[in-house]
Image (cartoon, rainbow over all chains, first blue to last red; front, top):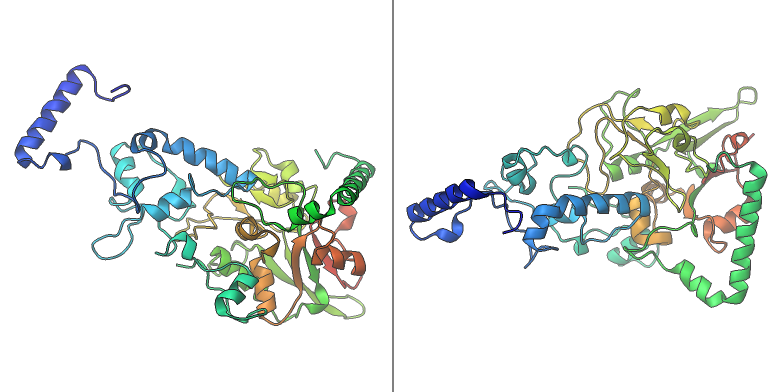
Length: 163
Length: 253
C-alpha cells in the first residue's frame, strides 16, 4: 500500500464507504470503486501494468514525445497515438467519444482529478479510423501500386488516414 | 552553430565527409549499399548519414496546376477559412513573369529545409530545430508562438495558427498559438525511408507532371543526387549561403 492516497482516518472512512457500497450493491463488490475506472483498451493487457500506467503514463508520453519529434523514433509501445487508438470509447449512439465527452478515456480520470491537459488542442482525440494500425492505407507509391495490383505507378488518389 | 561557421569551413567539412564515404565504400562496398538501402527501423534514431531534400524541375511545373498544394492540404488536414492573409499554407505556387522579356514560369515554394536555417537561429525556446537528417521542424510542445522564425525565414514558408482547431489528423498534430511549416512529410519519411514520397510529389505525379523528386542528397546512387550531379540545380537566394535542401532546376535567370 505504499503511496496510497488514503491514510489514517481517511483510509478508515474510505473503507467504511466501500463497505457501505458493497452492502448496498448486494454482492456486486467487483463493480465498486471510489475512483473512475476508465474503459479497457483492446487486447489482453496494456503496454504496462495498470498500477504503473496510473502513476507514470505522463512520463512515458513525455519521453516518447521528445524521442519522436526530435529523433524520429516511432515505436508503438509508449506512443500517444497508440493510447488513443486502443482506448477509443464508443458511445451509445455509435460515435466515438471526444475529449469533451465525460466518457472519453482520458477525461474520465482527468476531470475527476481536476488535472487539465492540453494534448487535444493539437492531437486527435479519436482514432482516425477503426482499423488497427497494421491495416491502414499504404503510404508510398510503390505500396499503393502493390495494393492496387498494378506493376508501375498507379493513378489512384491516396485516401489515407482521413477520418 | 552551423550558421556561424565560415563558409570555407563548411565546404571543407563536406569534402572530408565525402572522402569518408568514398573510403568506406572502397573498404566494404556491399555493407555500405545494404546500409543505405534499408529503411529505418522504428526504434532507430535519424542520423546525419542521410540528408533529405527535394529537386524541383520548374520546366515540368504547369502554371495552372496547384495539385501539390491540394495534396499537402489534404495530407495534413489544412483547412482554410477563406482568409488568404492568415490561412495556413505549407506550400504555395508562385507564377513569375520576367519584367522585360515577359517570359513566364511557375514553381512551388515551401520550406527549403536549410542546412543553416535562420528560423532555428532566432528561435528563443529551441522549438524550431533541424533534425539530424536535415528536416527542419517546429516542436509545437515548446513553441510559444512568438513568430520570430516567420520573420527570419527568407522564403515566407511558415504559418501561424490563429484559431482553435478541431479534427486534426493523428499523424499531423497542430494547434492554435504555434507556428508550422512543411515537414517534408516526416511521418511518411520515418515509416518508409527513401521509398517515401511526400504528398506534394505524389499529387504532382498523379496529375501527370513529374516536377518534384524526393530523395537522399547524401546517397550518391539516389535519383535526386544523380540528377543533381548530371543536370545541376539552383538554390533560391543562394547568396544567403543557407545550403538549402530544396533545389530548383531550369529556372530562367
